Image (cartoon, rainbow, N blue to C red):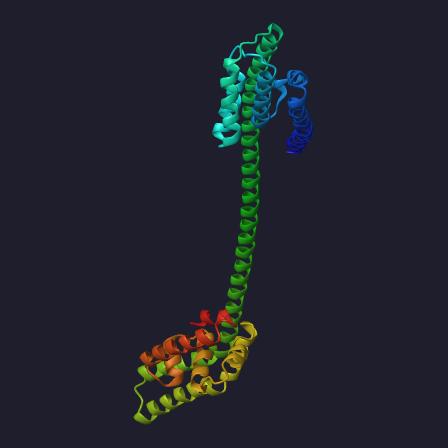
Length: 327
């Protein structure tokens, strides 16, 4: 890439040096055209046409050369040189120069003067013009190749940049995925710790309730004995609802990153019944167990759970995305 930049700078410098020297020589020849047309023709003959760098300079030289030949009463063996000016000015809509070149073409044909040296020089200029055309063609190929090379280099750099950006995106995604996995693992750990803690806390009470229920169904005792068992079950359920609630709430906050505290702060108007439902849900209790603790049917618990989820999704989910995992 650096070499290509050096080449471009070299071509620019060369073009600038040419553009300042050749027009000056043509200006001098044009200035001499009226006072000394013979010297003007000599100046134009001294120029190496094959070294011209652009078609505008070539057309101007051809116009001045034809004018100098007419001024020196020399006829041209062919129309090659004056046609250079005619073709260029026609294509570029330069009306005045085109008209002048057309008049010079007619005058060159009508001039009877012949000069062997002038004819030889004219033919030499024709050869130089052919060399110029050939060189211009090669330059066109070179510039086209250079442009294609620049384009290919730009595409390669663009592709490399895209690959680099994509690589950074992939690394970001991998990092996010790794972070998400860590959070999921941490969440699983929190849930497991909560489950273990609640299991130790409630195991004895639920075991007792289960044992009493078993005794009730198997018992052949009197109504008073069966009623005593029912009252004992109700008493244990009430104990879970009252005595164990604070411990369950604390366990949830300890194991789930103060989830319930965040909900209280974000939604201070949450009803007590809904908060109790949320604590039981966050503790991982089943819907049937919650219905037993709250003294409501399973269908009612499902409906309340759905309403609570919608409300917390609007007011708390943005602050605490983990709240949705409760449901």
